[in-house]
Length: 392
Image (cartoon, rainbow, N blue to C red; front, side):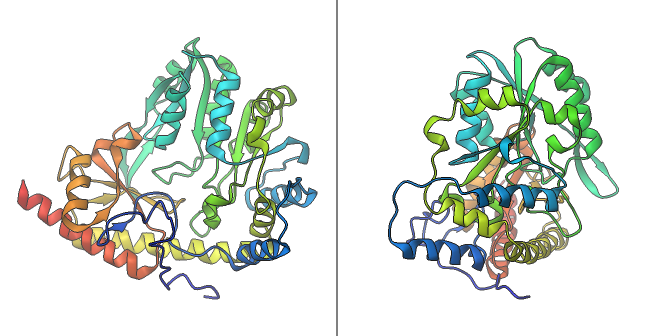
């Protein structure tokens, strides 16, 4: 490989939220990779820093072009530049959109399990999480999730339902949604007058040969009722640079959403250079190698579970660097297991209950780490399962 993903990066003592933990602990929890960003991104930031003046900045046209070209080439989404608004982050932008498009007490439909911050945004803004649990089943590939269509239509048809937050690809399961599924969701949302807020921040972390289709790119119906939240931050591990965008095709919907942003529309002087570099040919080359490395890490994890910890089972996934691991054979309370795993072995993973739905049967494991760290984590997981079973 041209790029080095094997050499561990020392992050303790660098004000890292992920690594601000005990000395003997190993964090495999928050969606933050233990890799340096792409060299082209690092260079762009260093070159901008070398200028030495950090006054008020504007939005260069090259920033818009970087987004539109990237999503056309990588995802088949023909965005127009005027559909884009730039913001400091996906989460604050979704929060502002919730306030702009609904009233306190309104319901926001969300499939579960799902990214825990969505629930916090909904409920922290005085709205109600209209949770629609997905159905867990098994096919020839293993465990899989599907939508409970009757439950989804029931939630969307509620007159108090104004919005649906959609996660594409799905976090924590790593599911890439089929076009037909998204089209069916779009038809239901049009029928019941529900706007879709589609978080696609993980869309570039895909397994080789796979591709994420944006919800808004499925058809004209979806395009007309969707706000899409985009960023290079997860794929290039530059979350703290605060660079993101919102894409809204419908002019009235775009006006309502962007009018709510206020200071969120401001960015720092590194936001544009970093995004432009990430969404370049050099950034794409690095990303392709990263995705191959993550695929190998996921395969290594799944193989290890089958051979060494058969009590645990990973849900097969096609996107993200997160692994959703079923713990139902050893406990009905994965939060209890997660706490004891951390206390006994130092391995820190996310308890599935954070993501609601059937999360008490799962943990979320971050596989975006150099292979030495991954192997350490898997051995700790094996030890933790043994200790947990012995202690029951």
